[in-house]
Image (tube, rainbow, N blue to C red; front, side):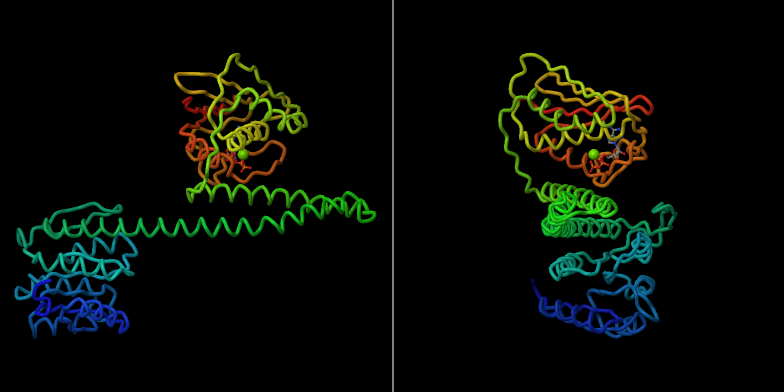
Length: 404
Ligand SMILES: Nc1ncnc2c1ncn2[C@@H]1O[C@H](COP(=O)(O)OP(=O)(O)OP(=O)(O)O)[C@@H](O)[C@H]1O
Ligand SMILES: [Mg+2]
């Protein structure tokens, strides 16, 4: 940077610590820094010596950052000095306040030193020039109308600052999301073993292998076992979803016989279906070539579709599985004669923990993760999953996989 030594910046900040941090960042980059602790203080400094840039906090006693900025713009001797606001930007209103005050740009706290310096550099290169003195225009934002200065230069600066912020924050959110997935994965993993112990020991107790258990006790132990089984399943689903979201889901693609695959899954669900007097039907197509898929993961998908069809249907109904080929795809469908899903709730079906107003018909447990996991597994196969459903008639869930 040329002549960085000569470039003087006024830092306006009521917090001593924040001021010290700002000063250090700027001084280390070669700028000359003067400090002021509020707007009034800052105006006095600005009238006493020349400055090339003002960096001001927004929230301050006496005169805040926006008021200071307005005062700078209102004073012909100071009006050209670029102003950068430092804000926590708690609401869109803060952004509009900055624009109305004619600040050139802003940066949100907490900021990275590099981001601050690159914005300082950009601002020092573009002196604030007012086009159309005093001209304003009306903008609608967050449900309200505002009269803002019609100066394209700093509107553009503000927009670019917002863009920069969003990119930074997205990056930050990605990082946090990754950490959250890691944490969730570890927590779910660590809960698995103790839960398994509870489930196994309660099974041992009800089995009577450790001495006689009276009926009342057996009932309670059975509840412990059933609940720990449910929690184990939930923990497994959480592990699945975190694995998938952190991008560590690995598919073991193998040629698989679709008919045999469906029949195996039907067998797994038959006991539960029979207990509800629901008929599971499958009419296998002839001469079906093997499909490339991860049969273990796809089993989770089909199992969830079958268990949903059974869970959300009334006794005495029927569930059909259909397999058909169409233009380079194989389509697997599970059709039920259940309650159907209201049209306005269908869009959210594949979102984690999303349950619709449709309840299980016999109080079966649900966590709202099955379809979210299914969707991610199907996407991993480069396929798609969707539903056709009508309240009172039933639902058909389709899964389409490419045939390579
Ligand atoms: N065949 C269906 N008929 C009617 N509603 C359904 C059907 N399948 C799913 N739903 C609705 O969609 C919601 C989400 O299903 P999903 O499989 O993701 O979760 P779940 O069955 O509630 O729990 P989990 O599968 O994690 O045990 C269900 O809670 C239910 O309201
Ligand atoms: Mg389910």
